Image: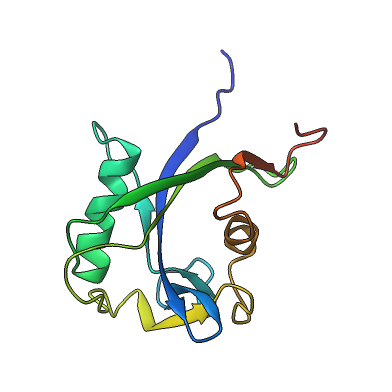
Length: 154
């Protein structure tokens, strides 16, 4: 029998606005999740559920994690990532941005994040989740696809 791997899909939403020092992104400080706690990350992100599209997942996460609706999603890029030869599931992340939504973003899951903050894109806080730091550097660049952790990645 073949040893098949699993690809885990997720959607990330980066809310953007113009700040005094240029573009800002809304980030959350992770806590209590067991993954990258103490790191800054997308204010809304999560696994795509069965029967759900990537944009639907991003919109759902916006409501669940930030209490906002009517999010005008812009597709940014897809990131396919792994950790080299480590025996982990591969990840496929669909990244979206938005500059328009209804409601005021607020922390809806305080057991998973301790803080929300608008951060300058040019000066992200430390520490930021490493693969998200890379993704944030590509917002608006028309990159389309990124791969991380693969030998001879194209």
